[in-house]
Length: 246
Ligand code: C5P
Image (cartoon, rainbow, N blue to C red; front, side, top):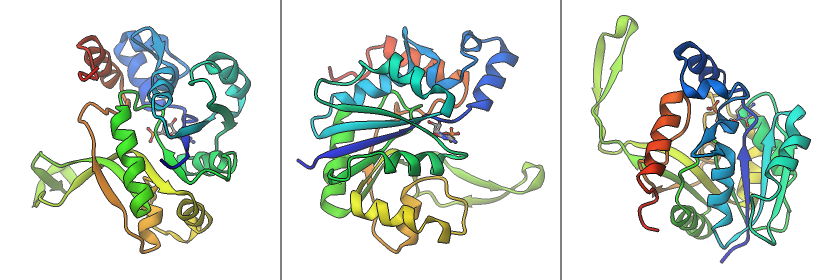
């Protein structure tokens, strides 16, 4: 199997999360440092995420982008969260997620064949799904974990008046990890300033180069923690025994 580097952008301020937690006086209000370090079933969210990747055989290193003033603290706190023989590095992130990924990419070992990018705030990713995305990326170049849309989709105008029901039959929601052959991702990031549309995920940069990206079916439980409600949902899933296979 191909050697894989993992990039985990974890340098966001998580302003929505902190503001909502404080306003609603939820238990998550006790995590003023943001959602990445909020406690989930007794451990910080990031510790869960690192453990999921440590369970994947092909992964040889993980590079985590954190806020510049947290690099030393994070290395000290999370240094033991990775499997023996894996390299774990903390680097300073940037102004936005794309810049954080770019900096982390520069800190990866250039000899690995595959690079997987995963949001720190998706702690319930299943190792089997990560492995499948790595397999598809090795074969085709680029793979994105996601889910087919199963809700009815409405487009609204100002005032929330519905203007259209969007056919959902070919729509998918993109999650992470997003996994790429190293040389493709390096090229996509080198050319990223040519993309004029708002960039909300990494695969978009590959698509902008006219290259194929394939979806890999993931789990609805691969939640992205944005609000304290999401943290509560993750907590409930873990209490119920997620991932149910093991
Ligand atoms: O803000 P959003 O929820 O889209 O963030 C997604 C991920 O990107 C989070 O894990 C966050 O920590 C990370 N991020 C980052 N650097 C930034 C902004 C966000 O690493 N400057």
